[in-house]
Image 1: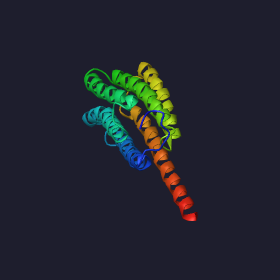
Image 2: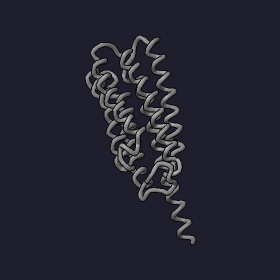
Image 3: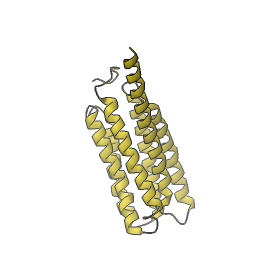
Image 4: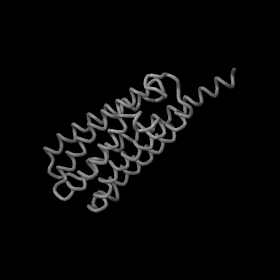
Length: 194
């Protein structure tokens, strides 16, 4: 399917529904773990802080592959590489300072948010529930700026400072998935009534 083609790809919504529910579950579990078992455990926090952008890279890769490939989905291709670089930068920064880690997360949130926004806009005519992904991208961009600001003023920074970001991400993925379920139910009821 070419960019600008407004025909819905077969099974696009079915894939996105599974994808959004999976992203919701992972982000929600990450946020809960960050606020509980990892909060006072540096090593677990470090693993989770590196794993989060790696998970985002993998998720973008899988979604792009199911949606025409990385060459068709430039925003997800860039997001994949940005997330891998972020994970490496976080791993290095963990040996220096949590202020640097939070600044890196902030920068990543800005860039990833803009790329998610671009992906949502591109998919607007091809898939349902993209309004939530556009809102999520915009929120991620704002949150990134807030992280960078907080990294400059906070003295005691931990994984809990990133947990809210993951929780908001979980919320938007959940809203997108539920929106797709509702759309499917409406289509089914229209077909049944016809």
